[in-house]
Image 1 (tube, rainbow, N blue to C red):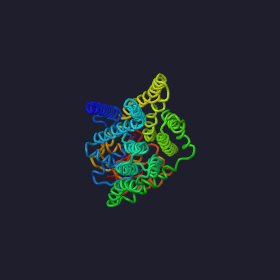
Image 2 (image 1 turned 120 degrees about the horizontal axis):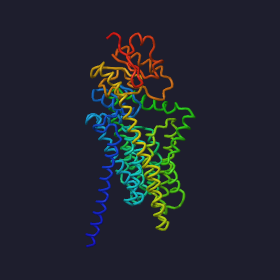
Image 3 (image 1 turned 30 degrees about the horizontal axis):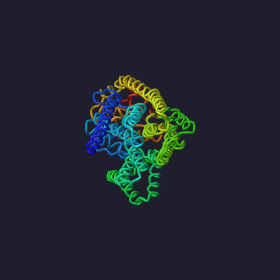
Image 4 (image 1 turned 90 degrees about the vertical axis):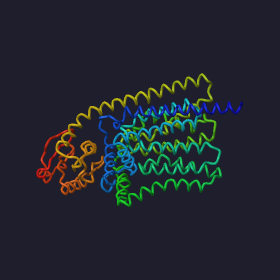
Length: 493
């Protein structure tokens, strides 16, 4: 009888968790169905970064190699993700990958919170808070930060399990941590700053516990090395490894270092004024130093999380670029910080616990959920309004080109290639932001256009005076202006 009772309770808990997982899956589908420009049947044109990744990913299906044939400065895995999406079903294929990624995140956020507080309801609320922050910061989706999220959360989940447990940690966890670090490294390497204190704390804990430190470290290194070497070998075999190092590592270092002090302080202020950041920092500090948590492991755990959050926050917010999607990296830390609220309240009497819990839920609704919904809806409406003007430019290109024809774009609008089924006449398919001197870039574009003689060249309004020199205007004639671009056609084809 006792075994039957225990089995029934175990089944009941398993069923509750399964239903929560299904609910998070449905919610993830709904969120991306409403917000993503890539959802099936949507007519909204993808945002800037997403269009670059899609263009490179789709070009890979035609034999192009990132860095060698098409410039960009993100990690190689983002192009493989987009290539896979296009191979599955174009934009809808990428949308499916987004749904899988967000669902995995939501479930991992629930499990992460559950490790901390052991409560289904509190853990579900923490996961919903993470989804609200995702809505607030996703900015169109298909971004490097978005695809890093499941792996950053996995690293944090393993960290919590390692610090909390009194048993030897499985080497499998070390391998998974290594693989997750490799994926983040191959998508956006500076995001690894978020996990350095976590991994350091794990290794220190293992050392003092007398665990097999060497074997654990070796498993982590193997997990990191295998995918990294595989991608490096692919790049090397296609003659793109040196270009990857130049564009992904060296260019990003100069890109991050180009902002002046005023812009860095402005971006820091912008992120620091975010309610989610303030609340997360406050909860982590209280958990680390107030003494409200009774377990020593919990204090050590949250001090490691606080250190990681602070290092990651400073490195992210002081770049001088206040893009909202940068804050996606904060979400796992927001989830784990709010998951500790039941533990902080356990020393108070039950009526006080209920009162404070109600206030926390109201705070979550007012500061996170409602603003995220409002931001998402207004952003979607702006995108729909912009799409009508974008199609004016698309139709101008379609009327003058055929499928697969080369065109030139002097600006940052790879969506034009995607929606006109044309290809770039230069390896510089777009001009990145944050460039101080565009002269070398313009010279390369002029050389490429001179060699390939594209029928059409589109020049963004703010580059017209500096790019359209006399030799260019002798070869190309002005046709029209549409959606912020001057359209030029080859005089003699």
